[in-house]
Structures are given as C-alpha cells and as structure tokens.
Image (cartoon, rainbow, N blue to C red; front, top):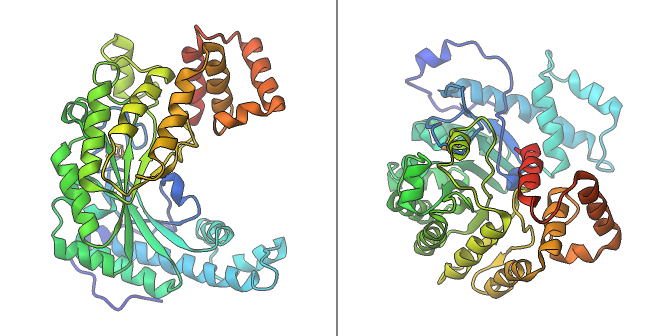
Length: 395
Ligand code: SF4
C-alpha cells in the first residue's frame, strides 16, 4: 500500500539507495511489544554526559520514501503472519519458511519485526530513534497516515521527543500529529533542576521542559516523562528531587517513569566521577532522594512507573494521589532495614531475583543471594562497589 501524498524537498536524501528494513538500538521499556519503525538515525543532540546510546554515531534523517518502504514490507509480512496464526494463534517453522517466500526477496529484518510484533498482539508502534519529532511536521504526517492506513487496528503510535524540539513545534502541527495517530510522547526530562540539566549538558532548561510537556498534553497526546534518580550526584541531590517534582507538578503528565542513573565507563560523566568531580549516590542515598521526590509530587493525577531494571524498587508504582503513601512507605521500609538486610535486598534485586522487598520472604531466593554474597565477598561495607559492577551488565 502506497501513500498518495506527495513527498517534497528530500531529493538529496532520496538519492541514497534503500538498504532494507531498519531498526534502531533502543525503545522505552513500555514499548517492548511495539513494532519499531525507524524514521531517523541516532540522536541530533547527542551531548548528554550520562548517555552512552548514540555516542560516536552521526544523526541522519531517513528519506520518507525509505520509511514508507519499511512500512510496506512489514505490512505484507504482518498480514501474512496474522493469517498463519489465525487458527490456534501459533506460528510453526513451516509457516516461517512460507512467510520468507511471500516477498520475491526476503527482508529478514522486516519478517523478524512482524513475527516479534505478532507475539505481542500487534497493538502499538514506536517511532525511532531519539527524537522523531525533529523531522518536518508534514513528513511525519505522511508517515503517520501511512501507518494508520496499513494498520488500522493499532491502539497507539508513540515516539521519543526532546523538549527543546517540541517547544518549537506549533500547536496546530502537534494537533495534526495527534489526529494522524501519534498518541504518546516519551520525553527524557531527567531533571527539573536547571543546575543539574546544565551540568549534564541536557541542552534544555526547566521552563522548556514545562512548556513542551504542556504542549503535548494540549495537543491531545499522552505524555510520559522520564526522571533519572541520582543525576544530581551528592551535591545536587535534594535540589534535583525537589525541582524535578516541581516541574512535574506543573505539567501533570500521564506517566512519570523512573530510570536510575548508571555510569558506564565510556561516557563523559564517568570521567567526572573518576576525577572526583561527581559524587555518585549510594543505593541508600538514592532511596533518600526518592523519598523527597515522591513526597514533593503533589496536586497531580499521574501514574508513576518504575519499569526499568536499573531501579532499586520495581514495586514503587502507583497513581497519584491515591498511592502516594504506599510508594513512599516502600522506600522508607528499605531505609529502616538493618544494613545486612539492605545488602541482601540490593544484591537480590540486581541478580534479578527480587522485584520488591516482599520477595525477600522467599527462602529459596534469599538463600541464593546470601550464597552469592558469601562467594563474592560482598558485605554491607563494600556492597555499593559490587552493585556498580553488577549494574554495568545492564547498560
Ligand atoms: S537527548 Fe537523549 S538520546 Fe540524545 S544524548 Fe541526550 S539522553 Fe541521549
């Protein structure tokens, strides 16, 4: 299926040959089941000192014609996959062989994407990479309308967007995007503190975050804001918590998502940390910061999610204001525990055995954690260093 809309002003980009269906490296955890459609490559900003994802890679827009071709390819496979699964919902190896030959030339990446999407019910689409809203609005509209034409059953189309970019898009254009099916924007706010934002080179200030967030909501799209506990380090921890909560209180986003700071060895922030210019918080200090943040969130109706493996508490989730006390209570419970118990929880969480403190009651899991601590020589005095090493496996 080809869009009838005319695509103009991209002669130079169109000269590059189409190389087949593409996918970028990341998507939000909540988009694990989404079909990933790559409309630009890498990050146009790429300077945040904590971010390892696109370092050393140049940003580029993909020609709209190439994106439409990706959509057409995955569309053909998706329809065929649905047909195969129509009986008992299963896809057998023989089906996959047959699916390979539905296109003259098999595009394995597009077929894999369709198969993966089918396992999650083919309900949502995520536009990659780091800031899809940077492309010209009329081009984004062509892509969105083509997606709607191909997959009329989908429930949502979502994308990452930088506040700096969104704040410059007209309200009319944002409304048109929402009408064309773009239903949720994920923004990496990271912090509401101007000091923290400047220090990590986020390229945006608190007021721009607020403006962008309000514009997204006004356009009728859902808004998901990411906050990074620990990003202010020891020096700016309280300011980071209070200013982030204040910015979010002014926006009242649909979702607030936590993604705790981790520092891989190859980002600028690691150099600051190594020189002693950035004091990283321990898990206990991050929990103390989290209490301030959760308590300061006020007057909002947002859903708070902790859906990232780097977070110490996966069960700190709920809807404001109803679940505020419950969420604060979970973190306070950890802070009130004896150092040995805190260590068992920290290690068990990073081993993937505990999702929340209640899981410590499972004797078998607890035994596994205690054995691992004994073998690795982990004690309350050195647990944070051990945790740093464990976390590097996830980043
Ligand atoms: S804007 Fe996002 S993707 Fe780009 S460098 Fe910053 S955190 Fe990374």
